Length: 362
Image (tube, one colour):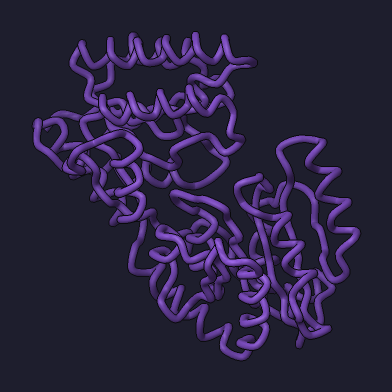
């Protein structure tokens, strides 16, 4: 069988997701080339589609291709990228889209974003969703009467993607956390949809023992939000902000020091942060919404109703009361993470590609 040429667009190196997938697809006869960011503009996509002529275009995040400096630029770019995708389809290139989200995280030009998402969903030969709930939401968003073209392929774990050698005691010493303290952790990019400001407020409102602390490790997407975050943290006793990008080598320090990883998302389609937490064997506090409910073990998380007043604060109180069980909860999550290695994800993706090339439904 000849090598199948697949173009990942865009190809983002900041996380292991696409690199691991590319490495594991190659032995199965799949050659993957990526269009990187920040060069991920319509010109770059057009150039690769025209010169390399891939058999299959695998779109991941859609917004880098059409978001512009203003409404008119975004509208023009959206029309162009849709025209280029249609032209590639007319030349015989198959189309797969992984639905990481249904609208860009910064909520810019939402009407155009939803229009492009709906069109790509209808043009795609197949769509990949990372959970059953995500599949239902993608079908509804794209107006698909049936979901035959949507395949559920869970994301691979991160067990081998990050160093994990530091002990709990050494990690806590590095962060200045007492051994017996109950440590809640938020780690990652601080964006509005992740609910970090709500988490700080909930931590302040919760009736927690004096030895509970919340550490936030990450950075905002702009200066205004950085100043707002620092101001909010200064007003919150026992909330410690580690501002800045967390290097790969340092992720283990925060994870191994924590009792609970908190994922206070307002809305989410798939969560790499949940996969990271379970891969480190951490107990989780999260809203009881579909994709997060599927990403953690039944006895590995404290879930709360995101629409209930005080729901997050009550969940933090419950977690503090269950700190003696946090290690066992983390082990349950780790077992779940181990059940889905990257090799399984790559094999399912390869099988999907072959079905698409053969003209069969997923």
